[in-house]
Image (tube, rainbow, N blue to C red; front, side, top):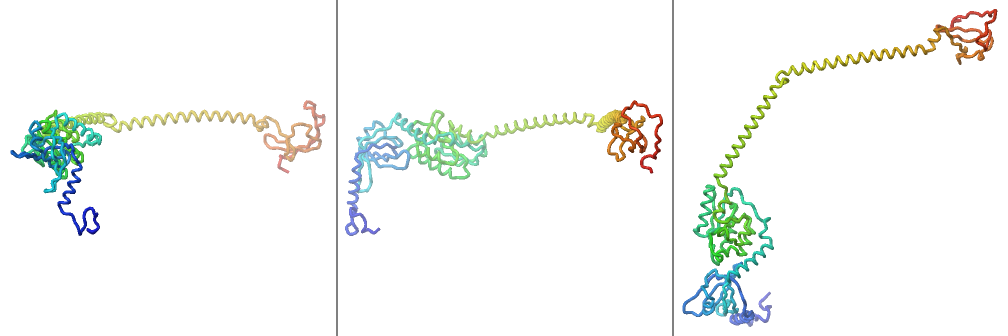
Length: 434
């Protein structure tokens, strides 16, 4: 887009506005804001004796944004107490544009210090907001490493809190290493300084845990550790964070978002590293218990082995074979006896069945003197005289051999007497001979 294409209300390339005209128009727009109420923290204050104006820098409590405020001396004196850096105030001011310097400033009409009640209400509202976002949930808490390679420590410059953490940690574990960041832990710049140190230490791969600590102080002194931007930075950190702010009764919002809350700096040292004496004692105790269990196990196994070795089968393995041989011989003898008994029984039974069969067989009947009379063609057995006719030839089977006979007389009565002159029959040769 060329300069000639700009909005005509902003002038043209041939008829541009002068700087004073732009400044005046900006002032016109800003003056439309009128009067506002703004809350913040006093970052700087300049009061010059003999001058009618005092100057303040009012910083946002959760960011780096700040505003310049000009306050008439009467407004400052009406506060009713000293107005110091770090104080939380609410200012009623009009927005003004300073054309000569091209700056936006607020002209204070009234300054009200934020009392303890108001601060507590603000902190409670902030706590609820952050809790609703889940920043304080236990599920977000990370466990501390058992033995960190290096401990990041954020504390005040040459502070007692630094001494307590470092000395007590090294007393517990002499080899522990620290990466110390000494920053402001009180005043309007404290929250930003602590947050910057936290981000720096969190980016260091060798730092396994970060401790944020300071000693005790008033409620106002500990306000930087309830700063919203600092709380969010701790929640977003990848490295576990330990909060050790003030005394046990103090509870800034940092305690709620940290992975571990220590009641004092000394307590933080106890939590971040193990006690070498306790660990040695634990190792000795474990070693003693392990030795005791090994001895008990060896004693038990020795007794078991002695019991096994005393068993007859182990002391003399052949005795076990002798017993088994004796048992096999006894079983074999019993089996042979039972087989013999069974064979005799079955033999006697078979002989009886043979006798019965022999007694009932036709051969036995023939041997008692009976004969079987059949037709010559062996088509049937003659059982009645009615089946015969005179001069018929029949085959007669005896117990041994057979012969052919001619029928001379047929009598239906078996008790009738034979004829006085028996007919003469020709003797035949046994069956099968001519």
